[in-house]
Length: 200
Image (cartoon, rainbow, N blue to C red):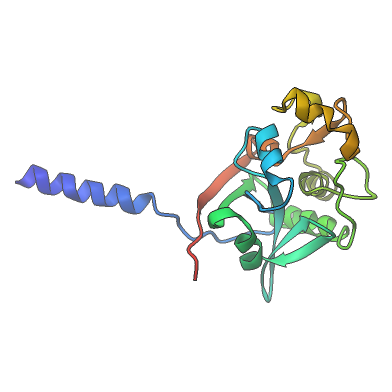
């Protein structure tokens, strides 16, 4: 009976430990989700990923916000950002060893792009920005950190038919881009949390 009791207690501890713990967000934390946008399913398929969208956390006096490249680059309350994702799923990454000052500079750099148009052609210029480009450039320019990895569009997990449609979308199979999944795969980030956010 004593062994059985201990086993039940241990199972309870394991169950509790797998529950998501609250995260104390820091400026510069990275959040990922599966969004409901028109291209989201294709982005997830192409990058073999659960993620199609990414943004940067800003902790302000009036709440927590996500700086994100949508149409246009916006500063979105975290709760609203989470609600746009599928099933409230959220992953939080933190760059290992990022100082508070560096995090502040990363956010400041991202906010310089507020109002800039979304780049549906995934070009690596500053006239328009896509979500993971915004994050990578904010880290590079705000903290001198290179994050994520450029990949060739034609080498992603797309069918021949899908690749044929690229020119009609203003894309080239030889161009490079940086996916949300490449940020999630970057060993410089610590995975702080991954869970379904309770709906209220």
